[in-house]
Length: 84
Image (cartoon, rainbow, N blue to C red; front, side, top):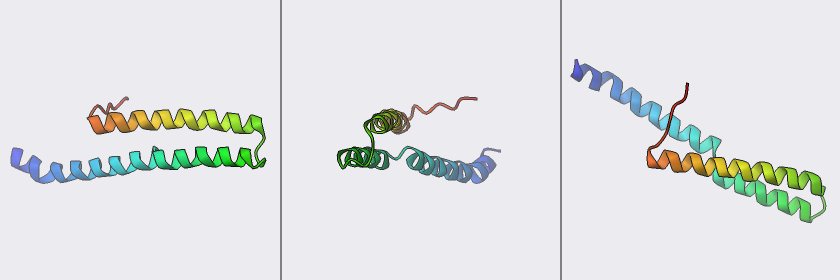
């Protein structure tokens, strides 16, 4: 029974783990979020974005960056929780 589990389920678990890692990297891409934050700042400084819109977008991006950092920290430390 254990041999069968090792042969059938371990490769499947490895694939799922790899897909999970790729999905987290894609959904919580810190570099992309930080680039968007810089772009937002630049557009504001060039006068192409009003201050109200700039501040609103800045707050959204800072929240997303905080969440992304927390997700990456939890994933790298192995403290990933699956909620139902």
